[in-house]
Image (cartoon, rainbow, N blue to C red):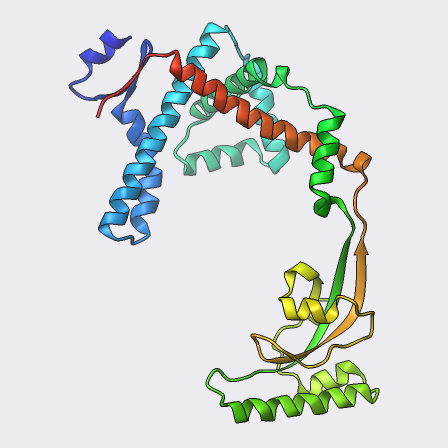
Length: 308
C-alpha cells in the first residue's frame, strides 16, 4: 500500500504513516477545510489565526491517525456490516427526523454528499461502534454500588427543587446618578413599600410605579431557583412565603421590591427512579475513558510517523 502511494506522491503528499497504511495531504486538507474557513471568518489577529490553524490541523491529523488505527483493528477483528444494517440505520434516521427519501437526498446535496457517500459514512460509523462494543462496552460492568455512590455525590441534581414565581417593582438608577439622586429614588421606593404594607394590591402598585420592561408569559418575571438569583435577592426571599414581598433591595438593575406570586416544589427522583439515567451516564463516562486508554495503548504498539 505504501508503494502505491509513493507512485502518486507527485500529485499528493503523505502526511502520516500508520503501520502499513498512509494518510495523504488531500485527506487532511478535506477534513481541515471547514474548520479553517470558520476560523478565518472570525477576524482574529494574524498571529492568533496562525496559532489556531496550526493547533486545529494537528488535532485533526491525530484524529485521522486514530481513525486509521481503528479501521485497522476492524479488519483484524473481521468485523463486518451488512447492507441491511446500513439501510435500517438510514431508515431510523429518516423516521426520527420525519424525512422523506427525497428530503434526505436534498439535505445531503446541500452538504455536498451523494447517497452512496452517505451510506459509506454510515457504514464506517456502524463498524466503529461494533469495534467499541467488542473491545470496550462488552467488558464494562456498572454495579448497584457505583450507581448509589453517584446518586449520593450528585444529591443536588436528584433532590426536590423549590422554585419561586416572582413579580417586581423596580425604579432604575441612572448610571451617572449622584448620591442625592439615588437617595430621592430610594425614598420613593420606601413610599411604595409603605403602600404595600397598607394592603394595596401588588399588581396595581407595580403598574403605577414600576419601570420593569420584562414580563413573562405567566405574568411577572417567571420561575426561578434560588441559585439563579443574586446573593442579596436569595437572602431576602429564601424564607418567604407566597403573597409576601421583600423590603427595598439595592440591585444591579436599580431599587427593587420582589413579590412571591407562587412557590413551586418540583419533586426529586428516588435512587430507583434515577438509576437508569445514572447507569447511562456512568456507562458513557467509562466508555469514553476506556476508549481513550485503548487508543493510547494501540498507538504505543503501532508504527506511526508524521511527515511535516
